[in-house]
Length: 330
Image (cartoon, rainbow, N blue to C red; front, side, top):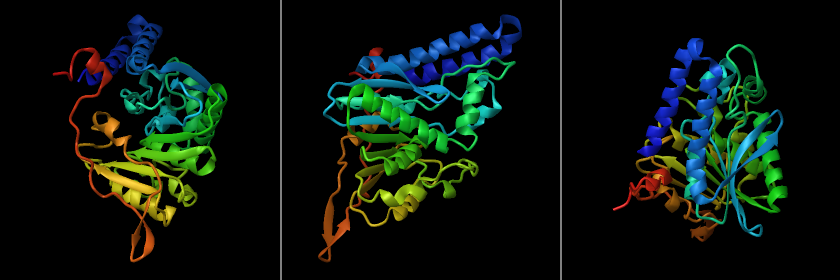
């Protein structure tokens, strides 16, 4: 796929930069890498009229891509995964943890709603030198010393949502979180009155039970389960890949149990999807599924409606960059 080839080129370039620092200097490598990553983001966002804007947070900016045409309608906000961000405090910028595949942005690009906003993780796309602590490392220590879902991270996204409300004169959001961004979205939804719905994709919804070599994933950070009790009346849909490495369905059930009795929660197991593959191709169908509160009756009593039927896999290619090169068309 064109996108994956592009991502590999970025990784390869970073590796080459490391090997030639002594000969060519760091600045040229950094500027070229940054340029390629900006091209990567623009190639995803610009064809669907999502325009870049930097949103100031404490000590840094969030990179946003926005398409907001109707302030009377809800804004679909996509929050990027940053599960490896805690490692940034151990690295210089040449080993930065910018996402090689900004999957949440690619999901946002498939969303046909009128108002769509993508938010990067704090500290993404900042650069330091190899020989001095600069903005990137300082930012990482501030936001990620406690992992990818610290209180400072939640505060940053809260400030960004406030900024979006003022800038676009909008009133409400649906939060769509991928990976660690799902944890952020769930916690934000529990704390704000302007969130009308929640979707999670391959979400780490119970930090205390997250395994697969990431036992310190939330060490010192926040756990969505601790905030779940306020979400029973919020429409939400949780998407879990059947091929996820971790036992995401268990994490979801732990979270659902913490939410308590509710007929506003739905979840689906998605075939041919894991923690980072198979989502973009299916997202236009998944995002169209009902996001509401709907009760049925069991033995004459109201009971939550749970969708346990996997969504059929849709193999059509929806990657915009492939379309730009004529792929995915018959």
